[in-house]
Length: 102
Image 1 (spheres, rainbow, N blue to C red):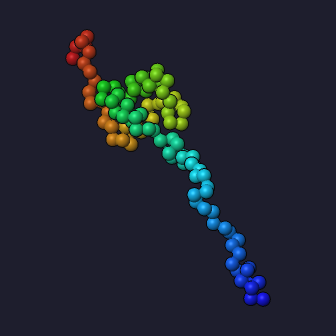
Image 2: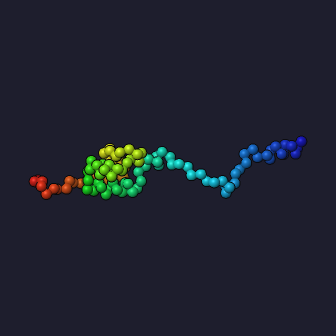
Image 3: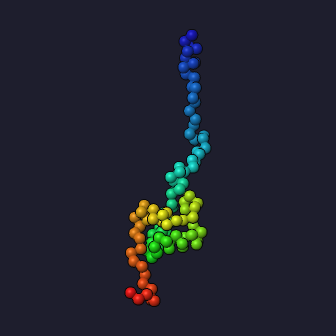
């Protein structure tokens, strides 16, 4: 009787897999990571914000067929959010055109 109980108790119902034998699966990114703007895009917005206002940035990026991280056309609100999130200051002043009097 003792050997039967010992066999039942020592039987491993959930055998542990050898971690070296399993192929490691790469999980897809979670939703927040999937829709996050990449650092290069944020840096591009920073460069454009120095010389353009938000409307101009949107027009330039849409003309270049750049999309949002979720695949939609860019909008002014998206650019404002990126500037807010990364503390990118808006254009400090409008460039003075030669034909403007004032």
